[in-house]
Length: 171
Length: 100
Image 1 (cartoon, rainbow over the protein chains, first blue to last red):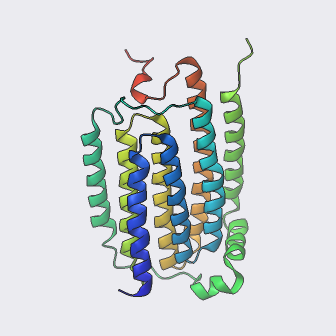
Image 2 (cartoon, rainbow over the protein chains, first blue to last red):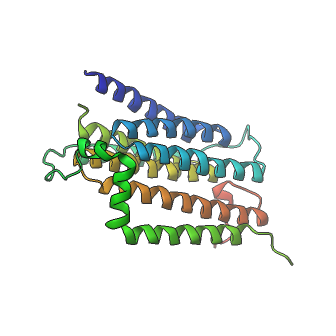
Image 3 (cartoon, chains in turn purple, green):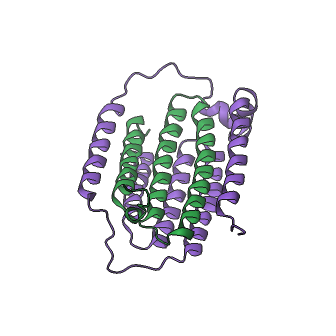
């Protein structure tokens, strides 16, 4: 096992354990904290894959905005930790079976890819020559301009929708 | 050199753990968190393919997936808060006002 493979093995095992911890905690605040550690591991994996800008974006947006949104909602709803209430639904073995079948199917089908299409132009040296942010910016604002503008419309709809839905109704 | 199939298997495992969390938990907040987990696993797969095929399309798509995930989390939690004012519960099997 080469050194990158040893590092990737740590990340893989850590991320699997962390995601299991995220979905099985009784207290939702504990879940959110394990999710924070998981997001930092995912950002480190992006660094592995030569996507430094995306690693920064992952931490800023996911760990800095979405997690804080979850924590605010948990605080707003004033959820107390339940001791004796059932944690799982009544049909949870069915859910676990579906999840295991998903994992086996995806691993067997998608991981057997041997023939990749022709490699593109953005090799590691080409990305490192200008930096990850410059390369993403050049591609995003020229070739993917329409999806970028649509994404800004999606964010506008989300802002207006969230404000309208959570507002106090004046009777 | 880490083989591409390792990244795909890791993405599949985290996705299936997200599926289990969504299907098996009663707490609505945990269900939202499992949706975010599934979206992040797809992000890992996109980044891996973008790296191994030497294209930028994967990284751009990660950008948009993160954007849409943020918008959907905001709207979903706003709907939850709006429903909580009527019926103060977050257990998904107690949200059954439309049940026949």
